[in-house]
Length: 124
Image 1 (cartoon, rainbow, N blue to C red):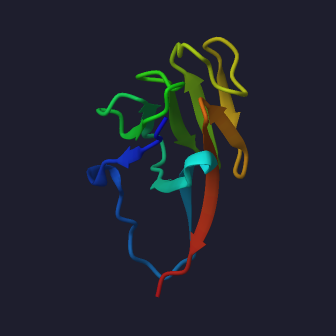
Image 2 (cartoon, one colour; image 1 turned 120 degrees about the vertical axis):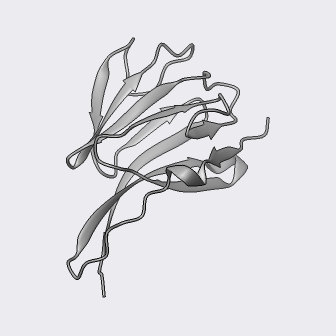
């Protein structure tokens, strides 16, 4: 089984240029058994669908990930994660419930890990 994670470049957001320190939120997607890790910049309030479908903004080639497995929406300093009726579920999720994912917390779907991270960038 080969795991491949594809990100659409058009979904990456440019950050405003100012002199203040700014928090940026990322979704880190990794499959350690396949030595794959990618980071995806998140935008406040924008729903992101994660799944095996190649049309998903975060497309994950994992035999245990459904076509549209779960959605993630950044809300403040947490991400709202909702299982979209996936066949195999997502660790931390029960049925079709919604949870909040805090920074540095990890979600498991299939054999792939998803982690919310914060980075503060200094603008010059």
